[in-house]
Length: 125
View 1: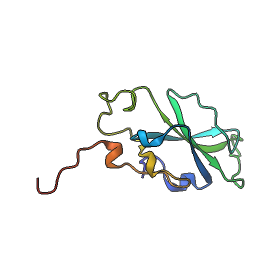
View 2: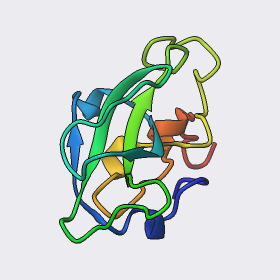
View 3: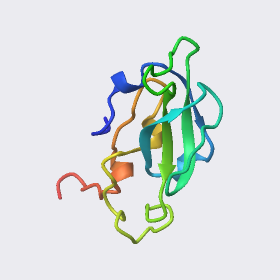
């Protein structure tokens, strides 16, 4: 699981929409953002690019304090591995990052060998 979100944070999700081919991305960052709508591409004014987002079930209610829906977004910033393969994250990944292949609606995803880009030690070595 991500160290920052749990499955209880994403219980109202109906589907995940990917804007890019996630098979080429070793990790994506995930966060929950307040948006005015349950479905459709949410406004994203983050530092990087929006890679995907969650759409919510019709039964999910707005936050009574903000009048917004809490939806998960997936994004990458300019210094992430896909843009800077020899940069800060040539191995490892940010705390909020998960392997996008492990993400599903109502499931936060996990860090994997792929997302961490760790060398797998051969048995008996």
